[in-house]
Length: 278
Image (cartoon, rainbow, N blue to C red; front, side, top):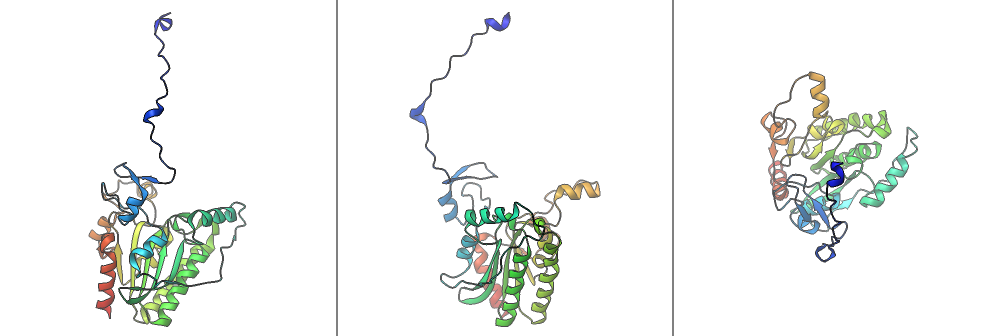
């Protein structure tokens, strides 16, 4: 048979002399340019790819470090914990695992701090914790932060990143939309400044509540922002979507956000806006 005449390839010898020993967890791949990057290099560059300029998502601690003056952040210590209203078997295990992996207790951290000496109330969401989804604890922490901003007469800044309401907590997660929105209305009545910073991605119930009703809505470059995902929208309306749909640049053009700000310029921008409001 002709198959028998095909010469079998000799097994390739193992070439251990050229093997590169890459330490686990020390490297990260850029989704845009596909370059393999040293994590510390990316972190030192404000979590921006030094090769193509793409933005990586930021951990809560890194975001606070980049925006809040050193040694000025004081976290609100709320004695509340995530519940399991739907009694899902795996949900508590998932929460426990995420706390160990990320080093944070929930998808948002709220407290007071200073931006170039100007005191603010700041909330930072983290996509690494269940995609920044808004459950009862997230909604309560943000509402508490809004109420403290009113009490202390301070500007409020919220860094938003979320996949939406937390489905593991059912309808009670959706109720956080109304609660946070009502709290923002009280902040507005008090005449206090509220700045929302939309980062990649900001979707669902967060977009439909506190994220989009700020006095000033900023966004990072190329952040994806919307309510439902593109596939769902396309299937619903039965039409192709415009180029760049749901990007920060598209939303700026259509008046949904006020300004796109580079990450390295964000602290100065927030500082200037606080001064203007004063």
